[in-house]
Structure formats: C-alpha cells, structure tokens
Length: 223
Length: 189
Ligand SMILES: [Zn+2]
Image (cartoon, rainbow over all chains, first blue to last red; front, side):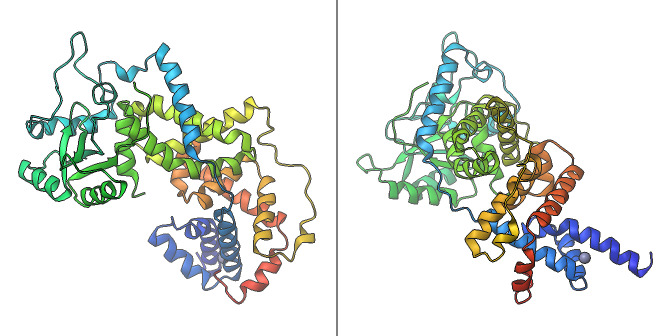
C-alpha cells in the first residue's frame, strides 16, 4: 500500500467509526485510529463535528414523558386477565434456563436457610409440584420493607453482622426463589422511606448482596 | 453495560413471577422507551400501547431469556418488533419516508432548539430502520454490535444503515455549512 492508499483506507475506517466515537462506544484502539486520522483530515473533522451536533440534538430530549404508574396498572390488568384463563408455563414445575442462576443461589443458600424461625416453609404444598413460585408462596410479608438476594457463600456470621449493621432482620425467605424479606430490626421502628433507603444503600454497598430492592407499599393485586 | 447483572437478576425474578422485580424493570425502562418510541413512531397515541406490548412479552418470556445478549438489548429488540407490529396494525406507512420537505435552506440561521427541531424533521425523511439505528446509537447510546442484536441483523447491515442515514441527513441538512462556520472555532464540538 502506498501512502495515498493508506490515507484512503484510514479515511474510510475513520468515517465508519465516527458515530461510535461520538456515542462513546468505540474501543480504545478504534478511538486511537480515529484520532490519528483526524489530525490529517479536515473532512473527517467536519464529519465528527456534524455527528456530534446530530447526536446532541437527538440526545437532548425535552419532551416530558407520561407517569408510568397508570400504564403499569393497565398492564397488570391485561396480564391478570390472561393469567386467570391460561396460567403461563413458568408457574408449572420445571425450570426454564434463566432460573438456573437464581436456583444456584438458592441451592447453595440452604445453609443460610437453616437460620430457621422466621423462614417460611420450604416443603411442597399438598398436591403441588416441588417448585413453588415466589409470587405464590412469598407474598409481601407484613412489616417487610426490603427484598434481597444474597451471595451463596455468605457465612452465617457475616450475614448476622450485615443485618445488624443495617438494622434489619429476616422475616421471610429465601424460599425457592432465593429472595429474603427483610424488616427493620426493632418491631416498633416505623419504616420511613428514608430509613429504608439508607438500609438499601448499606446492603448494596456489600458485595455479598446480589440484589436489594425496596418492597413497594402501594396496594398490589394479589396473585 | 454495568447495569446488566442487576437487570439479569430482576429478569430472573420476573421469570418466577416476582411482581416487584418486574415493576422495577418496567419503571426503569419506561422513560427512555417512551421517548424512544414516540420519536420512532411519531405517534404519541401508540407509545403506551407499544411499551405495554413490550413488557407483556417480557413478563411472558422472561424465563426464556438465555443471557446470550444484554438484557437491554433483548428488551429493545422486543420493543422494536412490537413497534413494527403496532405500526402495521394501525396502518401507518412505516418504512415510507415523508415525500416532501420544506426548504431547509430557509432555516439556515437557527438557534439551538430550532436546529434540534429541524434535525427532527430531517430524521423523519429516513426509512424507519435507518432512523431506528440513529436513535439507538445517539439517543440510547448502544454499540454497533448491540444494535445488530436489537434489530436482528448483521453488524455490516448496521454500518450500512448508519452510512445511508448519515449521507441522507447531510443532503437534507445543507445549512450544515453554517454549523461548520461556527465549528471552526470549536472544531470538535
Ligand atoms: Zn478522513
């Protein structure tokens, strides 16, 4: 390749890469190629400027969006309308693959499940299959403010100190879904949104906490 | 994206029928999906319908997600397919770009928000798949590979669509010369 061929080739490559540099998704190597070429090509500098403007114009969205809650309620009505007639397959015993990850957590969390006391019954209900879905078996436990999934290798002592530091106790779980229901430690404690938020942050800061989500207090259709 | 492991867990819980997890996913996607869809369809009346069609599929199919792509790629792919269906159902002429266009040169001296408006008009002249590609890249920040996953096409096709969209916008927005004038003073925007 002579020099002008090289320029043509790097011009094409750069021109193609410019959008991904603009949106920040180009690799370091791709950025390097583009920067090198920009130094010697006014057309590509113009194109970069144009795409940058285009991107910020597209990205600058001023249009307000609707409140998601009414739409979400309508979606639940639609889902529940369907499920009354035809329960989806996932409620039947048997594990679709995506559940594998969670089930792995659950199986290894059996040691933690031995905490006993507050944990709900893991045995299959009469006539039921071996798997009980979370929504069926674990409705929101009264007083619970947070749902959490914990690392399977979390030691009992670590779990206890994590809960103590966060001012939380286990009031339900992990059941078959691996989800714990947590409530404020003191029975008299009022679960304010701010308290729950602080507890969530404390939980999420711990790498052994795979997931921590607030339990919505709004009334929800049962399943 | 960094959110993926969190979304993976939320989706896993959704697959088990966990409503709070599903609602968390829904709420986190609702704003960007609504904006994306209203720009894509230009039909405000279809936005909620398509958002809910999308999440209805998410609820039904969460258990079938194999984790071979990002959760966001999977959800946006569903949204794209629901958009196509909904537009077909509502009789919108979809891949047909608008036929006529006001003289763009007339609006050569634009202040910033007019420029945005004007680019919006230019975008409407692109076929749906080109417009979608641009929106996915510039509005939602997806990579070339992710867009290929969302639109269920090859990376080469994404590049080609991006190429045609850029060339077309260049031609539709000739007052770019005006932009260039200003850019001499701030060459990289
Ligand atoms: Zn060049």
